[in-house]
Length: 67
Image 1 (spheres, rainbow, N blue to C red):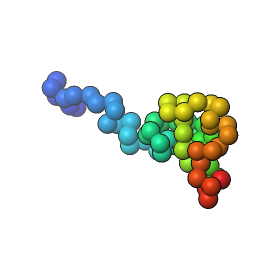
Image 2: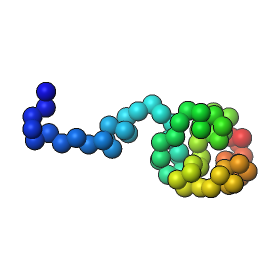
Image 3: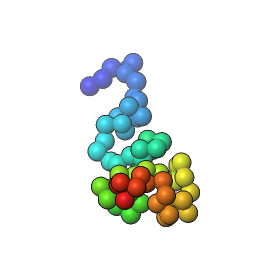
Image 4: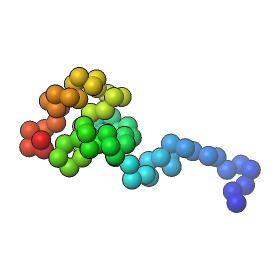
């Protein structure tokens, strides 16, 4: 068990999850979000943190070769 001086760093532990992340800003997204708004490989190129839903629906931010 860690001692009383051990620091809890939630951001450090979040970075090691297998959840998908936005390649534009690095924000964590759900797998369902990646299936809906991601490219053909479920890679998310924009998320609500760095884009609007209107922009995400058009898919203009996804590189042409990945659509």
